[in-house]
Amino acid sequence: MNAASLRAAGVLGVVFALGAVSGAGGGYAWLRHREAAGQDDEHHGFRDPRRLRALERSLDLTPEQRDRVRAILQSSAGTRRQLAQHMYEQCGAELRTHHVEVSTQIRAVLDPAQQARFDEIAARQRDQFPFGGPRGL
Image 1 (cartoon, rainbow, N blue to C red):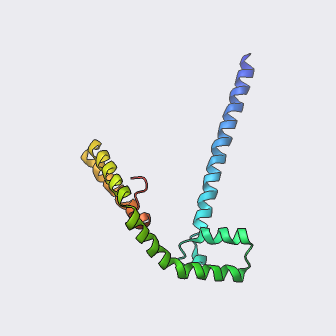
Image 2: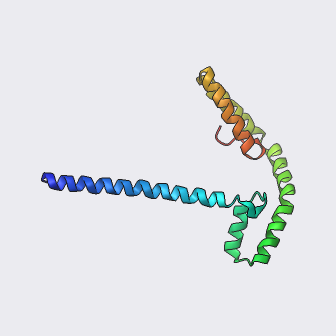
């Protein structure tokens, strides 16, 4: 191969890489936009807009049906949350114990500043996820 061929292959490789990066970035931005759209004023605090959108698409709901299904989901949300909380409390004891053991082992590896940051992350996750579920940390 001569120098011109190598240069052309290099340029082609760079163009390909830039295209892949921009495609991935565009896809990520699109997904974030769709996620944010599910949390707009249309849902008035409705906490399960993805489920409603999935039902709309799958069942081809009319606007009236969509509104009625949204009302059903909203009115049942409190009961659903209570039942899920009860299930987590009854069935999650072993998982919570394991979570505490793993977190203790991780904290033992960290210096004091990292431990403080670890505790902040864990607290944020407890606030963010239902019932303080041990997702991640």
